[in-house]
Image (tube, rainbow, N blue to C red; front, top):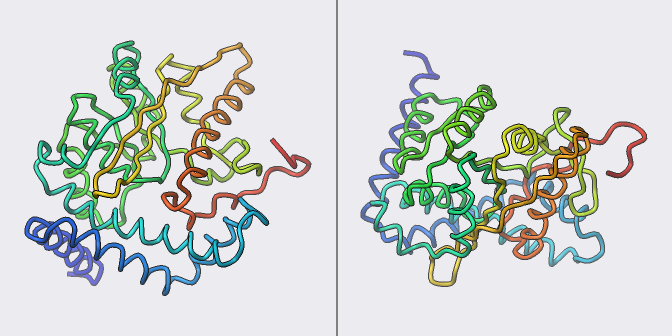
Length: 303
């Protein structure tokens, strides 16, 4: 047995133990522990703390002072600590019992999109509690295909996929994503996609907080090719520990025949929706990712 296989087995055992503990530890305790874990992560992970502070400088400039920026980054770390530990409860609990943790706004928007019968492209960001949103949507008999990046540990990957799929959703990996997404849309079901991370050289450049950001064109490509409905969704924690899941009205997809321009405009429109929600609750977004890592081509100073 190799060192790697021993590590993989230990990681899988740790996940099983965490899931088992979550069945006996009150959810409120886990949320509190997650908040503490996030604060520790903020204190110890200097690299990602610097990235987050730099992102805030790029996004807000002089609108935010250093003390306010540090406070916001700390709150972002605490939020992601909370949802990380809360995911053990979410994945372990019976689905009908999870309903008490969720309230909805705009359910008619997502149901109308499914009723159109051309599939649904449900987009969001690394914001709020996206794992809970996806799990509960499957529970509402509005199934989704989830696009994920496979973990290095195949044991953990299989375990996590089973947990994500237990409400009727289906997990597919990024490397085979486009054919599987097209298949899902032909089957008239939904595809969940996050579009808030740097897409490197494969992206198109659209404004995000006034700066050109490399953004995946996959959402727009699929919408224009299939006619699928494009629906934004975001989740916001409530003071009582529940989440408000919001489904916004369908985004208009304009097909003028100029494919490059249409892709750029739709991607910009969807990115603007994400920016709107980040501005509303900046502590709920993953500032620790280098969103503006990829620079636009020479001579392209703006979108």
